[in-house]
Image (tube, rainbow, N blue to C red; front, side):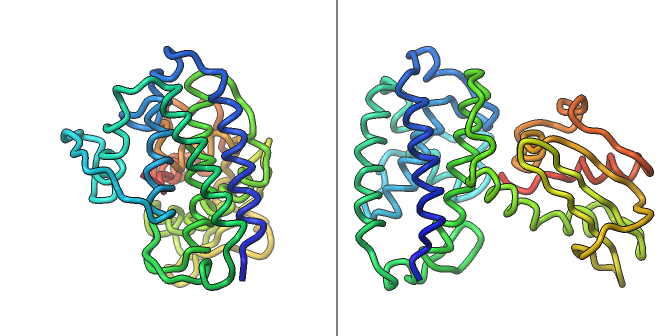
Length: 268
């Protein structure tokens, strides 16, 4: 089945990113972001590399130096694409980005079920092209927000792609509450994500396993409140809990709450 909604979110985000980047100065292109080791320009170069791969275009033959923020082979692939473009002017990288996105739109709009059902390895394991695109919405939207924070131009944080991203990140919360924070058996916690994207997430532990609850517990061990931008930054390792403390509040067992928040990192 053609993932129409996912494609719409994907290109809405890419269009938002393009409009933002068209106004950047060269100094802004080279501004460092919260994404470890990467400038604004590097974030765009990363998206180019992955979209070229999905389009079936050859990967860069450039070999990046070793950097301490590269943790695995996927990170190495990403860094080769990023480092190849580091010495270029931002406007040149943006021109490549725009041409490639136009090609991707043409491909996705003209493809049928066979294309989207094609089996492939995604960032989360075996899946299909449709599964990969579902993850791409998260990846591209997160990098757009990296860029916006770096140059202090907030925006697009209440879009369908934002809600989609937060929904995917929420899936990992039972692992955080149960396995990582070791919330006691029979107890529960509530994570309240506030504006601009609002979610109320109750999680309980039963027989050693944390799971989402269908109803709010009457007496959770701790309730943790944070805005959705802070949730995304913590989940993606963009800020340490201490750096985001002013945007987080807790009621109840604050020691457990701190352990949960300290283990929020879900993406690298």
